[in-house]
Image (cartoon, rainbow, N blue to C red; front, side, top):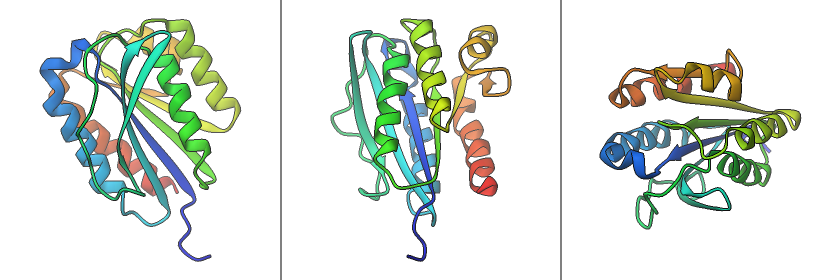
Length: 177
């Protein structure tokens, strides 16, 4: 089959309570990725938001290659930051897609509810051949490094830089294929 996607990219967006005042930028980021990847040949794209608690992660699919567009309705916002369970959930979704290369890009502005669950989820993804990247705010470098590894995260000084950083990662991903 010619033109079959060989890369699956999942964008995971934190929409916890601390993100309330920044949701416009989060939606811009989803739009940058969605417009850049949803119709790109060879790429399956999936975007999930997440919130909830350690034992009750709530994810919402807001864009995918299948839907072909960004849909921001019914997104649960507020609550905690169950990043580890959210990463594991994204991995389950990506495993259902046919691409050979799997990549998760996680944006979060704050600390997860449980750092050890993030480390465990990231390690499990990587053992299965799935790359995991993170984008966080400056000042979180130590935490991001311990959870994702020294070369596997980017930081931004303000949330307004997020669409630009995501665009840079998008270019790297598409060029690396």
